[in-house]
Amino acid sequence: MEKPTRIAILPSPVMGHINPLVEFTKRLVAHHNLAVTFIVPTIGSPSKTLKQVLQTLPPGADVVYLPPVSVDGKTTSAKPEAHVSLAIKLSLSPVREVIKSLKASSKLVALVLDPFGADAFGVAKEFDILSYIFFIVSATALCLSFELPNLDKTVSGEFRDMKEPLKLPGCVPVQGRDLMEPIQDRSDDAYKMILNQSKSFFFVDGIILNSFLGFEEEAIQALLKEEPGKPAVYPVGPLIRMGMTDTVEESYECLTWLDNQPSKSVLFISFGSGGTLSCDQTKEIALGLELSGQRFLWVLRSPNNEKSNANFLSAESFEDPFPFLPKGFLERVKGRGLVVSSWAPQAQVLSHGSTGGFLSHCGWNSILESVVHGVPLIAWPLYAEHKMNAVLFTESVKVALRPKESGNGVVSCEEVSRVVGSLMEGEEGKRIRQRMEELKEAAAKTLGEDGCSSKALSKLVGIWKKRAISC
Image (tube, rainbow, N blue to C red):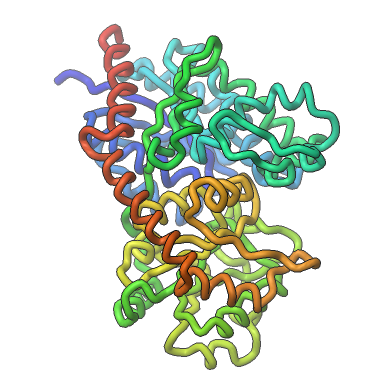
């Protein structure tokens, strides 16, 4: 039997990056008969959650876990982006050995890299295979990545102090303070790593983008415009996680609870796999939800007063989060509100008929899930590129409301109540809901047989299979 065309994928060991790559793999195997090998770097032992997600890969895809590495003492940066990027860099030697073995035993034609793993594109060149970046966030963020080397040369001082908004091709203007968080301190190792990654994007054979024309049309059209020295861009999204990988009893409890709520009446609140709030903000959200009178399902994590991304490298709360709620809160909202610890089956919650809104940290995976299921948003950005996303959703695509912070940087309970009520029952919420329904239809269409994203993926696979003929 003839060997199938094979690609290798080098992800970063972060759940928000792993999930879309798993869905990408499922489409490659199911629709294009490709073989896929995941080469997974690890900081310490692979987490239970990571293993569970990778176990959902279909036959035709396999996983190689690389030896664990330690980044302790190897960077001065406290930012998790720097730690992840360094972990992949420290794993390049075993990556090279895996690629060497795959090249000798199969029709390996391409290496698909996480943005944090851009340093590995040299391994692809070494073994004469194609290299691609799987860009896991927005087209707007990709436009910024292409522009960053130029900004580094032309802007003095910190980007957050820029007096004029940054105008990128096809994108809504963005204030410097709203640009992605890892580039806000240009003396930090994280900035230097992001800058080097952005420079390396110009040397890969293509960039696979988890977005779609119907969502970010002007930005993607700008990216698709051919320019000397710029790689081809393939918008193949929205690729989102659809199925459950856990059977935690509490997870089923929240779905059962949703079954007993009125249609589109529940606000789902989750800050992603990495996001954390301060103690004060946790209490203000609780009091605001109580004040609003709206139904809600809240995925609660233990707060952290120092970092908004304290769980970036962990999928669980560090301690029991319930004692941080206001005294008597759970009893007062019993019946119309449900609070669960650490995790809920987000895809199932967003697709449930009782879910009518989503208060989100604006992580790209969560936003795409919301779009696919047609659920309107409250934008509550925390870290990474989330502030850029919030600008996109509120000012350009217009599918989200955004609460206003008070002078101390905390959103008050009164403001929480106001914005929740506006989304769930107000006229502005109705307009956003209609816009989300339009995007839901566009998302389904683009992934259909004749959709733009399906055609982009077929074009890419055609390049790989043509390459395999000579293997």
